[in-house]
Picture (tube, rainbow, N blue to C red):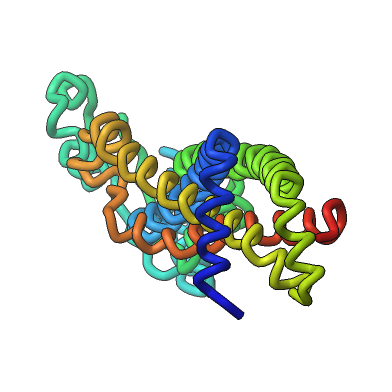
Length: 294
């Protein structure tokens, strides 16, 4: 196989259909950018779970009329539960001291509360924080001295639901754009093959194999897919510095939201490039086999 000839044909093909090649690269880049964004959001969800879940506690608030026997029964039940990693009992005074620590930046709120306003509380850490609802089932509200069971995970569940929605939307848009990219690649390859039908016909007459005549077109599509992947990664880097880092600057500095570092973007780049090249190559090959038949 004469590689110089193949690469010359690839370069010539890209030049002849320059506008369609640019359109193919841009469509592929948008599709891959959404795909990469979906991967980054999925990574962020994993990082946030690792950041928060080992700190989550479930609060079991007791009724003011809870008796010593009821507290002992709750303590015994927590001690025997395989779901519990650790727990701490706070009487009203200790609960008030904790309230003062938590809201030390809001003296007006602290001044309006007294130890009698805060219920005695069990602070419970679960082995699996996502199973916090087990405690609500074991300690029903309003029974056996329990006033209410409240898990911090309920708030996080809403946040993670939002992130999951963003991830799913990004993947859905990536699939939609991928379909548009496939159609555009198919049309571009068909036009390129039609423009070079004389050359490929001569090659077939002198004994060139079908694969040899198809290879330049597949390589053209693969290069366009790779170029789209490079543009997509550049877009993600620009979005990180120009949008994400500026919009979420305060939550990132406070440690509420983990930052998206360059390592995370570089880690997904092989997947984005691989999908781009594979998508374009397969689309080109299938088009040549089904519609052009060189």
